[in-house]
Image (cartoon, rainbow, N blue to C red; front, side, top):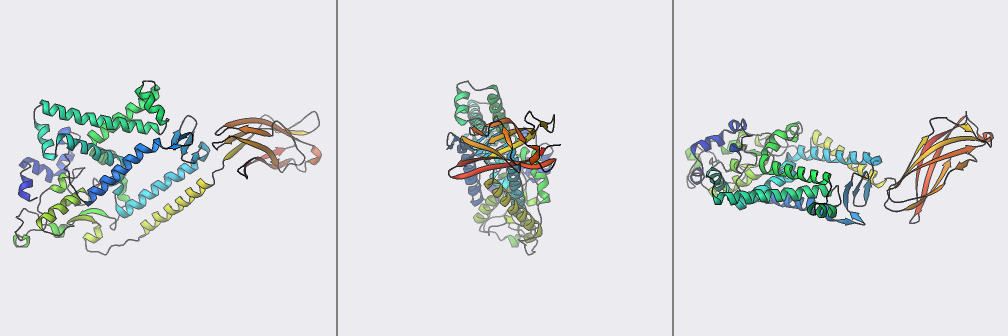
Length: 475
């Protein structure tokens, strides 16, 4: 596309507005100043689109995957346990969840230090859903220029049905998103069956309506406002950047001075750089910035401007890469450093946290025992002249199967157990068991002994046990 054809699409006032993004930022909340994103094709656009559909389908399909008598991923808040395929996380295992969050955090830090805001540009839910909404907008209202004209036209049947169809599709996507999200916390079959038969609880309806409204508002109306004004990541990401971080950058040495020219003209003879000032890089930007003004925190590294610029360069017969994924050092002609202390540090911590998470996941105890001593008295002498201590045992079967557990004590000689020493527990059951333990004073060598309560069972030929330390007092 030549610069003449692109200039015809805009009035003089609109071109001035594009070249002065700072002026529009002052009133970015005004819907009249909304950003009309232009469609573009290219390598990075195709990659972003495919990653977006994969992420979307993964999100939609995951709650439908069965695992035994439940769904594979189910955050069961009522019973306080998270099911992730074969792994069940209980409140007692929240350190595992903390390790997982730390893996995600340091993974984000590592990727940002190396590749900039690629998370924002390619896999962030806000970006994925926004581009899906824009896709429906383009199909129903037309290309960028047609959408601008449609909004400027008075209301007519053509405008009414197009706007109605667009918002109806947005609401349908938002409703599907909300019901899918709720399905991670309430069984999927119950959500869809009960919502549409009007048998769902008030809580389910509340969250479905809330997330429908949030998705519709964020991806349909707020869009870049979320990325620029509300997302905290846009603010603290600069702390992870350095001059060797890959960013979307404009080669000013090659591109300046900007200016229109014919394809056959020699830019050097005209005193111009390779940038023909077509403004396509601005028109395709989802946050409405001009990347030629330098690195800006609003840039989400989506690569749309790269595809737009490469398309123009190809049509003009120039080399691609005027706008590209590059680094500040490379733009300044300085040798780029891949390995640097910050990146190595984030990588080392990330690797450590991954190892800790894998180890913690593999060593989750399938049964847990907690011991609570009687707080009213440390000990008492019973009718038989034995020293007796009272305890309350809390047992938790963290498996999905029913097991028969045996209870015993280690470190206490010739003890007598008052209470059941063998109990059956269903999968996920919590049992509170009051018991007493008595010992002949002759067998007690010290006024206080360290003892271990043990709960054990046999499953598939293997012994599963858990041990909890306590004390036995005699004075």
